[in-house]
Length: 84
Image (cartoon, rainbow, N blue to C red):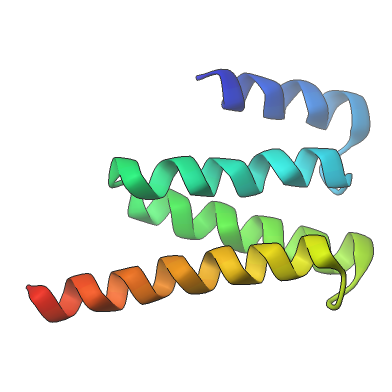
């Protein structure tokens, strides 16, 4: 998909730990979750979180946005488990 292509190009140009690259990783998580690609969503959110923590610190808004996304994703998975 286009996000994957953009990620590959950003990674080549800027490196894995650049915030622009990490933005795409975070966005991929947001795309994977509603598609039912739950393992991919969890993996990409975790990658983005680790990258942001390293690049800008734990208290930066980019890191906290990813923490929020991961939290919402985790809560939705817990609710799904309760329904099943």
